[in-house]
Amino acid sequence: MHIPENYLSPATCAVMTAAMVPVWVRAVKNVKTELPKEKISMIGVGAAFSFVGMMFNVPMPGGTTGHAVGGTLLAALLGPDAACIAVSMALLLQALIFGDGGILAFGANAFNMAFAMPYIGFAIYSLLLKLFKAAPAGKEQMTKKLVSAGVGSYVGINAAAFLAAIEFGIQPYLFKDAAGRPMYCPYGLNVSIPSMMIGHLTIFGLAEIIFTVAILAYVLKTSPNLVHGALPTHAEGEKKKRFASMLPLLLAILIAFVPLGLLAEGTAWGEWGSDEIAEVVSDGETLGYVPSGMESGFSLEAIIPDYAIEGVPDIVGYIASAIIGVAVLVIIFRLIGSVSGKKKVHEIEHSV
Image (cartoon, rainbow, N blue to C red; front, side, top):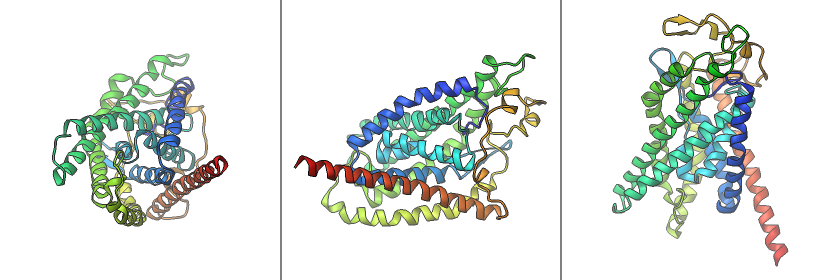
């Protein structure tokens, strides 16, 4: 679902980025005022889970691949505003360091996966929880939350995929070269929508449900007060400490298994490189050319392209990339949380 560089026109990228700016501003403002400072660092942990989740590529018959994102999961845990920030940071890191998703297309990717997915998924999750409000406490109540989150995550990832399909599909209608050929993504809506949605309505949607429900179930069992909207209780104190101490272990386990993502051969639909798109077959026909906008468009050399380190076995490079990504995200938000905490202490002292 990561839109690569030069698949969207610069004009489309500019519009999508402009649309995300007020979303980011609102999300940051709400998080600063509503999220306790001790939970700021949790945004980094959430971003790390999303980052790692996106490394688990799942194969689809026909040679394409996809992955979970965790947008609805993070919204259920931290709220949709914090989830928006977390997924945005994960996407930015992927684009800058690993070349996964375009720099110019970052606004579009964030709109799909950091805006539409967590907010729509959380809306469905919240609606279902209200419908289940009369359910008794205990295991049944936990089941209701997991079902709500699972449905919300499925709708959320498919909403994001549909938006990406539209962004891909409108390019050949709007931007053509002198010969009348598409300059950017060469496949119209009649191709992009079914190509994106078949996988996400089936296997990739199921992967998102499993990822969301599995991690949320762990949180609900170990520290339910950390779920968004839950009121902390004294009895949950020890559970919260135990949960926090288990987070590094849980991330470490996921990182150890990320090489499973290498088993999925092929490239996700719409993520081919400019050197391979000419050979892509659609409806039994090979494209046969490289769109001019893709051939001469913007390019930024990633530090660790495609999560591969030169001279290192793929498995080792993939694990190292996961460790680097997780470490960077966690450190960034720990620093932000630390600065935020110091500012609040200074404000209190100044007011006294």
